[in-house]
Amino acid sequence: MSAIRRIVEIEKIEGYKVFCKFDNRKLKVIDFQKLFNSWNVKEGDFEYPLMQSLEAFQAVKVIDGTLTWENIKIESTDEYGKPVIHSLDLDPIVIYEAAQP
Image (cartoon, rainbow, N blue to C red; front, side):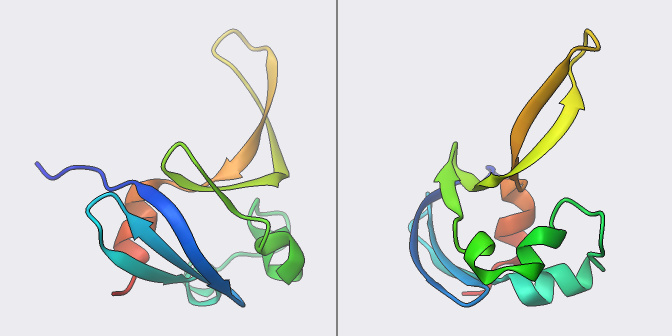
């Protein structure tokens, strides 16, 4: 079983490309324009605002080893049915697998 790779830092952002350093010291780039297109992101999807605004997209941060957009809020409920709000983040496995060297 392989380890789940975590992002250590964002090296740079160019347009919709994010260059990340992972915990295995590999530097990889994630092209989110291609990724969002492959996911067929459309209006109403959590990622949609990121496709509409480069400024919103580039507000990305590394939090808990993955890419997080604190400017995009998601409302859901916890296991007790109480409302919770959290920031949009992506599964680090998905990011690592989508990244190119």
